[in-house]
Structures are given as C-alpha cells and as structure tokens.
Image (cartoon, rainbow over all chains, first blue to last red):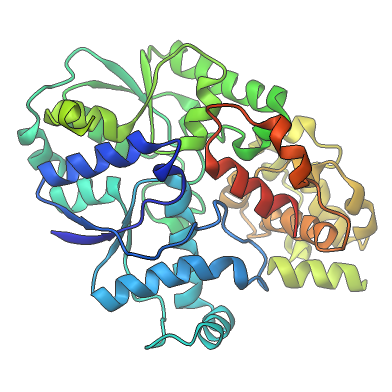
Length: 261
Length: 126
C-alpha cells in the first residue's frame, strides 16, 4: 500500500509527535508514505471566498504532484486534510476555480481533482480495516476510557469531507475499540474548540474548551484523542485531562512507540 | 439590491433570501452568545439590504468558520459563508486588517502551533 504523504507545517515543528508516530504506525502496517519534495504550507484554513485562487494554489500543487505520481494523498493533520479535501473538491466541481488555477500554474498536465484525498483514519478504516488492525495490536490499551475529540475540521461540511457522519461520527470510536480500549461517546465531541481565536481571545476559547472537557469528563473519559495540533493546544491550555494524538496511542498499541521516539 | 450585498453574495456563493428564519444556525453556533449580530440575524440583514450594519459587527471576528450552522441549515443558506464574505469585504480593504505582524511576538508561547498563526493570518488580513 503506497500513498503520497503531506505532513504540513505544524507536523514539522510543534506537532512532530503526530508525524513521527504516524510514520512508525504506517511502516508497522505495511503502508508506504512518500513525502513530496517541494510541498508548501496549505494555509491552515480553507479559503471560503468563491473568488480566491492564490490561497488555494499550495494545495493544488501537492494534489497535482500526487496525481503525477499516480498516488492518493494521505494527511494526518485535521486542518491540512480539510484544506486539501475542499480545494480538491473545488478543482473537481467548480469550473471557474479549476480553469483559473490551471491557467495560473501552467502544470505539465491539467489538474482536475482526480487525486483521492484520505485522512489516515480513513486509511485505517477502509484500507487496512479495523479487524486487521486489531490483530496487529501487541499492547492492547485495555481498561482505558478514551473520548474521541473530532472538532469541526474533520467532519464539516459533511457533503465535501465525507469522512464520517458529521453529527454522529464513529471512526475514532471504532479505532479506540480496535486498540483494545473503551470509547467514551459524549455530546460535545464534534463541537469547535475555538481554533485560532485563542491567539487573541483565550477567554472565549477557554469557555468553549471547558464545555467540551466537562462533557467528556462527565461521561467518564480519562483522556481525549485528537488529530489536530490546534485542538490539542486549546484543550491542553484549559485542563489537566490528558490529550493525545491518535497516532501516539496507535503507536503504543502497535508496539512501535519507543522506537519512534 | 445594494452593490455591497451583491458582492457578499458573489464572494460567498450563498443566497440569504432563501432563509426561512428557523434559527437553527444560531442554535447550533458555539459562539452565538458572544455575537452582537447572530447568524440568523446576519442572513436576515442581508436579505433586507441592511448589509452596511454588518461591516462593524463583532460577529466577523467571533465566527470560527466551524460550519455547524452550514451543516444544520435546512435551506442551504450557509450563514458561515455569508459571515466570512462580509469579513473579507472588510479585511480586503487597505488598512482594515484585524491582525498585524507587530502584534504577534507578544501573543506567542512555547506550545503555540504554527497552524494557529497561518490560520489567523489567512482569516484576519489580506
């Protein structure tokens, strides 16, 4: 199993753990992740304006590169995945964006959204399969009660992201189960953490995270799982409840955590 | 329809006139309590041609584009896109950026992820 792999800016810096555990787990599962040479930062947020082209070009470049390699494109950061997936949808379904981006970039071959964009969670669910994953677990996380925190970026808008049911997702709960732990389903798991607003208004993101954390703890979670460095930053700023990247617990269960460090 | 309203509809690709005022967007919004003009009022102002009122609303910088409103809107009005389009009309104008590079050093801490800064710059200035 071979994929192009887009780590993104934060995974090269503050979220190195998210990246290194993802790579170790992929190797343990027989997945080859190939990082393109010259990727650029995706911009962190999807440009919502219909007339915006320039902020989408970094995403188009890496999508087109994957197409040239004949690979699907895998990400682990929720924000990168969100941007790449939505820009790809524009390249496929919005003629104006497609024509303007192609005219601007002068690619070898026109890019028309043909690259499949997958989050690593989707690879684990749909390509590896949680049953197979379960068989590969050497250190089951038995007895741990883990709350999945999805946030907004992985799930919405549901018709474009198509990762899971945006109102009642289960992919991370199924992952937690495959790792031998007990998933804790709580109502605020797909509520926004406040995102980049914490730069200037920590009180607001504090209130938002408190709601999420109270909800998780109230339903019995001993720890939270996330795929997003910004969610982790915001949640950790407001609680002592441990928050892990899903790749870290996956690496632990697969027995490759120490080697990855 | 005013030129500004037309521009907002063009940038957002959304049509506020489809709103049936059910209020689901505001009910779904995690920061509606902080907003001086709530998501459903935003759509309503635009539909009534009162787009000027929105330019100075704090909603522009409270909205997180988390898309809870967009997901739950039964009429595909996409309030999150409308709010972003108004915000863009403001920040695209020279001198209207909500964040300047000079402010950054004071706001940093050791744990702050790069993703936060690139996201904030994308949203708060042009």
